[in-house]
Image (cartoon, rainbow, N blue to C red; front, side):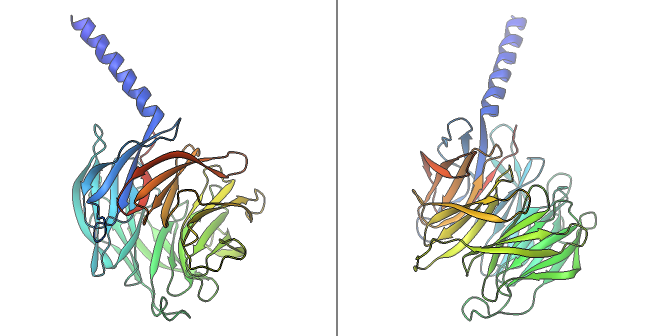
Length: 376
């Protein structure tokens, strides 16, 4: 009887492994106040063969967990709590059996309106950008996933030419370089990507030389992404609705502008603002989101130069695409429709990078951010 039980248990384990290999958990950050308010962070599962998404379930109640990041080990998740006043960052343990989230602790974000969070590649620190106060913080991660007291902080100064959006600094994203030696903070309010030296062991962030990369006045830098080869980086500019390609010097941290292209079709004269930028895992394609034109713009990346060539705009089922993400296999693109209360799934053409609707869609109230769990 014991042998039969052991054999059944072994079969069940194999079956579970097969299921996990064919799907991946998806975590969705939301806004929880106002119209059709949700309750926090939701969890779904993406079928890596078909692109189908399971019905979303609440993984953790939280207040405005607008942006999320998952630890490189896949064991922990970090979320900002976006507010107009003093902000915070929460640490969660991802429960291995269910995928649900258990709150570990919470720390101040170091400013107002935290809007973006990332984790360095070594998994040692949480990096957070505070939009309202125009500042950025470094918060060390303890071995158990909890957050320690913040150890690094920078405050931006200045303004730019747009009187409605650029009266002061507005840090909109923070990303570590592939080797964790630098941190890049795109600041919408001052039209600069601020470049800092990052010490992941000490959890500090200090001025670099060069101190920044400037973009066109009024452009409004928002989100930033490195190419997998570490030689290029891409910035989406919220206000000018443009995409800027940079050459990256990994020795000095310098960014040199190579090209800036519009994210919009010729002749479009409506209101629009840009949001997210993503490089395909293959390094062959780049994607950006347009809110107003309600589209994902697709570019091909030149393998030798890192420059961009327009491919298409995909608009099917898209409404206010605040954020989107590409699954680790590079097959599917999931788009969070903030004002459409949904997440829609597209299949990526491996030859052209173009997006094709799969027909799969789930309802989520005011989705803002999509993150994939570490692949099994």
